Structures are given as C-alpha cells and as structure tokens.
Length: 189
Image (cartoon, rainbow, N blue to C red):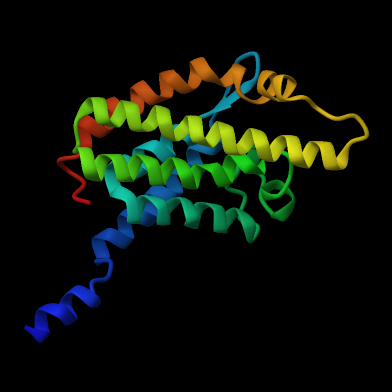
C-alpha cells in the first residue's frame, strides 16, 4: 500500500515528457517568428500554444507555455519579431503573451474532461483564445493608459488588438484542431 502512495506522490515527468515540453516550447518560439503580412502582421504562436495544450494536456502544455515565456523574459529572442525581455512582456501587448497560459489551461482542462474529440479541440481553443483576448486587452488598456497622455477606450483597444486577429485566429484554430485530431495518437499526454 505504501509503495503505491509513494509512486503517486513522486510521479514526475518522464524523459519523453521533458523532450515533448522542450520541443513544443521551441515550436511556439518558431511560430512566433513566422509573420504573415496581412492588414496587421499575424504570427502563428497562438496556433502553436493550442496544439501544445491539445496534445500535451494541462500540466505539460501549460509548463511548455511557462518555459516559452520564461525564455523570453530572460532575454532569449522567442517573442514575435525576434524580441525578448521584461520590456516586451510587461509592455502594452505583453498581456496577450501571458494570456497564453490561460489558453493552455483551458484547452488542456477541456480536453482532459471532455476527451480528445475534434469538437472539444475546436471549442476549447475558441474559448482559450477568447480568454487570452480578454486578458490581453484589459492589460493593454491599463498599460497604455498609464503610459500615454490620451486614454484608449475599450472599443479602440478591441479595434487595434482583437478585431484584426479574429479571422486569422479562427483559421489557426481550424488548423490546430485538425493537427491535434491527427497527432493525438502519437503524443501520449
């Protein structure tokens, strides 16, 4: 009986888990560097966050995002435009990067409790990115209004930071959903 309890308490990440976490942190970084020039530049990092959480689950997917953010915080240029540092993370748009944590948690939790079904991936990713939008927009408004003489309204912030990204993010969600549905049998979370 005691051996089972000790085994449960000491359950750690396997070597394969650590490899997947590292690989997906690198994938998020690479996807943040890929910029598609539309009316506003669109990166693929939200898609990579959704895929990491969808395939790795709550703990490993969220840890992957934490590692990605930590790498950027200490100066490794993993954020969009090959940027990094405290200034980027705590700047006006840094809330969207921190919001990736919520996206990973939501996707991971929904997949855990509702199963690895295609509709679960799609709905969890939509909700996860919506929460990221909310957190990031509130952060943007607070930081922008504290550092500028003219305040930005909620509608102006949404127009700058959310509306241009809705269609591209829906396309990324569709791709991430398809990839998770195809790859989940190969990545055991």
